[in-house]
Image 1 (cartoon, rainbow, N blue to C red):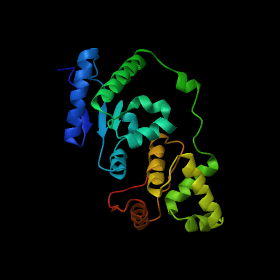
Image 2: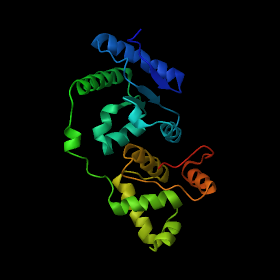
Image 3: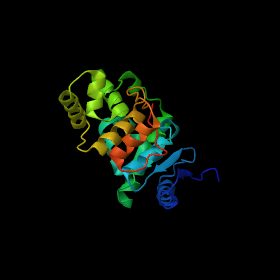
Image 4: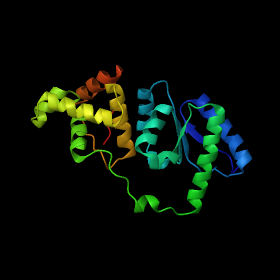
Length: 221
């Protein structure tokens, strides 16, 4: 019973399907992964998935099963953490192959200390100026409000937003919002998203980009 695999996840059927694939991979590879902390973060839309991510401390998990949407964000902007994430949108064969690679890397990592990341720290994704703008964006959400607070004109604020959106490959406000929020979870020390001044503003901001109610939504710190 010590080798029994446990995966946390709110969607029972997806979690069960992934567990079956894992059972098959482990049986063939003969790796003991009962000690691994694994969680499934999958839902109907990226906004709902983001709400599931909000409930997690990413550092608590060895493997996080997620959709291609969030896997691509990690792959593009946090490749050093890619061995922590598994994309579930691939077919069964690809998922099985990915898991074989992931589990072998985890096994090797636990067997040998790897100081490469400490010796070669990642270059910050955003400049200090961009970080300040992002904090203002999460606090206000509108170019006019940011311009009023910062003393800049609206066109300058809009250009800065467009440049950051291009930097993280976003063309829609909804993707911009989700990507920034998720990046903040991946790089806690890089962004410090401000809490809006009132719950009413939180709700309005969330509805503006998602079209959904925001009764349980909270901004990250």
